[in-house]
Length: 123
Image: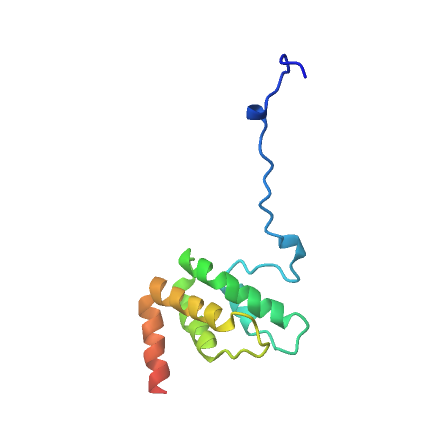
């Protein structure tokens, strides 16, 4: 090998291997709280219901943490759905994902979450 080469290992750019495998998902990730709502109320008899429920549960904590503009409006509805949501698909980590989502609401929309919980207890 010649030492007069015009490149060296130091000049090489590393190839980014960070593939989120989005193209392999059966449903696209929800991009809004309203879309999470639609995914969570999907009838369990629908073809992609499992995928939609799982995708919404996986995305909700980060989405809520980003404090979207409709957070205050959507909190009571989503908290109610999460509180009453059952694991109809025997989903791996269901309870943890559900709790992570509820915790995100409690941290980032505490007043709306607490008000809804008080109303739930009163019913």
